[in-house]
Length: 432
Image (cartoon, rainbow, N blue to C red):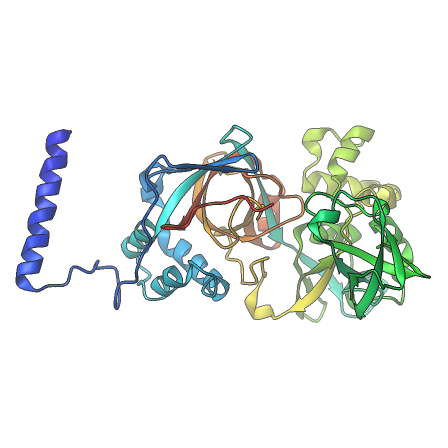
């Protein structure tokens, strides 16, 4: 072992001396154009902790099946995110380098190995976490209400108001006054005209804004799902289209985006615009507790099948999840847009908890395929978030578009391990 190390060092030294004597610049062969400066990698074994998470610097070769990755696809996905990352401190050089790295397997691999340090992530003392799946559903419906297309897809309501909440008020149960600053915005201001009782709002230690409406001289929480499904938004919100199936529409709310396909063949891409800020509640758990399904049957497919057979329970079950998402129309050419603000590439992107994982960073996921049960080890990009994605070792894997992707995503709930790759010299951090 020691002899091999010395032999390798000696060979490297001779090659370097030969290059210097011949005047040849020793730029790596995968670089097209001048090499960009890189930070100094943290020493192997370095540990950083915060928020119950521990990050440990490791070798690329420590990641399962690292040598067998499809690095060209990972590089392509990373480049999509660079549209936003390139303006972030510490990421400019790696994004510039990505743009000039030829899309070949060897050169893409060399890019990730030269410019990034892998950090294994542990949460609450364990490296094991949970991997679920999501997709972009294709809903059938129409741009106008018909006998079949009856369920509205709402944009941001006209009376919906978002008010930034300072961190020091997250645990407060007092009342504050709110001043309206725009059609859908306001601020907490002692000279405001509306009173908000913070005890009435669903505030957590992560809440950054109050989502509500003005009622008389009060600012109150926005309507929960049950009220909206019951008609609370009639005439109070733009309607982007109508869905044929309310259950399919419900799952589009969970996914956060989708495509509406009309009888004429028109496809309307819909993305997340905002939400009412009520907490996400699993209807699967509710159905299991009520004995409607066993816990093992509460997959997306199982829930859809039950609803078709028991339409009289539709309002009851869907109303258990008070969280409600409002949408906006997207350019069809871009596909799904994640929280980073860039398109998501099927099977090479995922949603994470941005308190623990840097949004936009490469993320290595080691888990199992939900159908084949074979190992699924993949270098994806952390380009999205979700209200149900909480924790350091928690990933929602993006399977893509349509029914086939939905079939896989609906069955994904597997144990997984994650490694966050950050540009050399940048340390992982917990962001409260």
